[in-house]
Image (cartoon, rainbow, N blue to C red):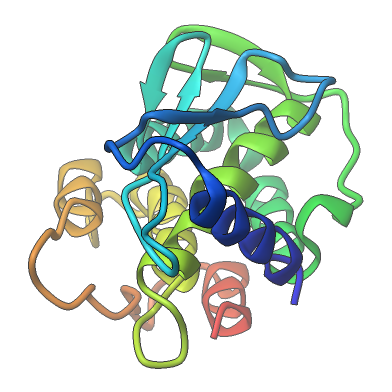
Length: 194
């Protein structure tokens, strides 16, 4: 499992962290991207509240969804779907190298940096909502694929609906959106995230 090793590392960091306050402890997971910082709680053992900051701005799942939506509108839907499935299956060892750039929160970044953002923001879901009891990392990946769907099939699901599904706090996460008229590669991508 591509997230397991770093989940263990983050849990250990929480166990030994001096401060128990929310977001009080900081970790830069990759020296290549020093503007990516993960904030985590201390001494909560198995779970807690994690926050990812990118260039000192909190990054959310809806931010990722919007970036994917806009990227898809530029004609890269199948590429980004394959890219996401690769991260889901292989984590940081995913191999989708390209010259594409994506815009997130008004910053243009390359796909390697985007891979790190996606990886570290979804990793926290397996800490806070572990599989198989909960959906863990599956939930954000489903929403990210739905961002592609919204760009390609706005008559079936739109961006506002995907954002509401992403921000579904306090309730079980909705199952992935499906419809017979979706592009086959989108149905296949959802099937691979199970």
